[in-house]
Image (cartoon, rainbow, N blue to C red; front, side):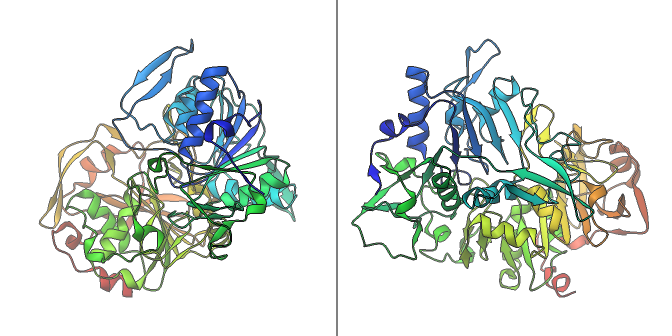
Amino acid sequence: MAQFITAKEAAQLIPDGATVAISGMGLSGWAEELGCAVRDRFKETGHPRDLHLKQDSAMGDWAVGQKFIGWDRNKREVPDTEHGARGSTRFGEAGPGLIKKWTSAHVGSSFTLNDLASKNLLESYCLPQGVTINLWREIAAGRPGLITKTGLGTFVDPRVEGGRMNEAAKDEIVKLIEFNGEEYLFYPTFKCDVALLRGTIADENGNISFRHESVVNEGPAIAAATKNSGGIVIVQVEYLAKKETLDPKEVKIPGVLVDYVVQAKDPMSCWQSEGVYWEPAFSGQIRKPLGAIEPLPMDERKVICRRCAMELKKGSLINLGVGVPADVAKVIAEEGLIEHVTMSTESGMVGGVPSALPNFGSSYNPESIITPNEMFDLIDGGGLDATCLGIGEIDKEGNNNVSRMGKRRIGPGGFIDITAATPKVIFAGTFMGKAELKTGDGRMTVLKEGTFRKFVDKVGQITFAGQYSPATQEVLYVTERAVFKLIDHKVTLIEIAPGIDLQTQVLDQMDFVPEIADDLKLMDEGIFCEKWGGLGKYMEG
């Protein structure tokens, strides 16, 4: 039976060198008081040290205006006030030594850990999100690992970078194998010593409800994997309940898998997402009128989202990624067609309207909330009809880099898994970085050219491998100025925006010369107007 202890007592239970797992997305699932207690114990005593942190999704705070501490190569503190402080970045606030190895699918919002990784003061690795999430089930079941084609040709492939994100990272965490005459990647399992998880309610027997959580995260799988590895499971909750009062269908982590429960002293350490403490429309307590969801302002972002929405068909199951793609949902809602497609996120939201940052991973009015493990099973098996994901850098082979931009480490999240198996992949983003644009009256105008190019000769890291895209997969690159398509593994210009000059404002701003379709078309003028109302005819096609 679970014991009820304080966060400080829980931190005392973690041994040096332990493999520690956390779960969730954004701040959903993040155990803030436990994270701070581990940080504080290390700062006071130097223990626990040399931990291997296993993190499946982005677990941090993109908000600005909160302090975090950076570290120089001489391990001296360097204050910085530009980044958010909550989430797994708390571990980095302890300085070098607490975390020795850090494996995650997404590292972008863990600012202090990222800072340590950039200075090689810890080892940093990134793997596809679906792989990391489903590895927990392999561990729980005592199987040796996960065999999949996900990651072939990307930076995760051991022939490329093997998932290593800095010079300090030396371990081989993925292997290339041949099975039935085909190439696969093998991701080995490992033992987990400690799980630091979060739920909403614990009863007296340690049964954990996720009642107010927007994401039913991979915590149940991590708990089973940790318990079956001989480790300990610690869960932070906001509320306590009398035993046998929770609906058994509401219990997501059974008490037999829980060793310790910590009731948070401060409820504000249990935020549902980065942007809100609790939005009941995210967790199913209410359904919010769609009219309360504000439409996008008329600018280049809205144009991109409208053009992406034109690729979707009624009855489709679609996935929307972080950034510009998440706002495609707002366009569909504004056009009054939200009931005609089913939108989803890799976090496990099915139906409703996915939210953008700072609440990415949550959805307004979801029809169903399943675990990320279940969602990635659906994704990996080709169950999506289409996905819309972001653009970082695109090169002449159709490769897309969203995981490492120069010195900035981000990680792939679910990008690699989703693009590996989805029949229609739509990449969305602005054509140039930092350009000043004017949108309206059926045209796009460049007021001031951008300061950096996104269409480059060679991407800095391969997150999507264009040359591994199967012939049956349709791949589009949608910007506000032009639309490209991967045809015979060549980036081909198929549309240009009205008001844009092909030579000076498209071709001259690319590091390579794309193929140009014989029937090069103008993008629909309607998407460049304040009012549109034309999405329905495209979704019927």
